Length: 263
Image 1 (cartoon, rainbow, N blue to C red):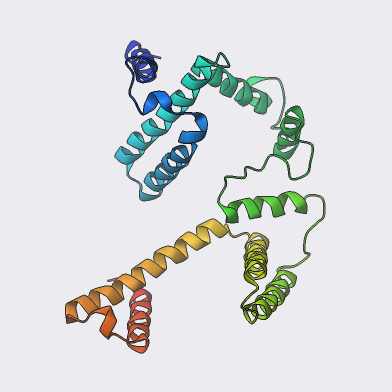
Image 2: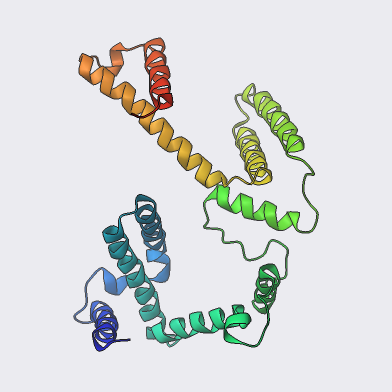
């Protein structure tokens, strides 16, 4: 680490200490808790993801800085309570990486089985259940995928994707039944969840990341709806005076435009 790099890290830690100073610190920063900033940490992580997806390296540098600041923030709050500091966090990461890579940093001839490593780490944290340790704050589709994958390791899984597709049809029928019962609000939510869970299961059996697949569909929906919006705007025609059939025609037009080979 160069002198400038070391000074940058020390400067960041000093900035955080000043922001948290009970007497002269920032009114917002000094009253925060791990619980109050955790939602912002998730936002920063997603902004890092967006920067990576867009290939914008300048934005990625900035977003990684924001995420690093959050790590420093948590570390400072813990330090104030005498629990750990930033250097303990860094040391923990170093120890974990060395432990997970005995073939790089030790005498092992080959890499350890990843699942065996994770199982051992969960046991060290007294997480003994098959489904233990899967973060509850994950996006629901991602967490469903991980829950299903973990259960599949012990044989709790469908044999073929076709069987999952049959389950989706079954869940769809159950949801249709509950839709007919207007007062069954909770039941409809349960059946909707079951249907989504089954769809995630099918994605897993097809080796498709459901979160990535849904992101692609979201982007596709945005493109096609934007086409409808642009055409109507050029016509000077508001949505309020456009019927569904007209919008559907423009939707199909957008689909056909996407299929045309680029020149």
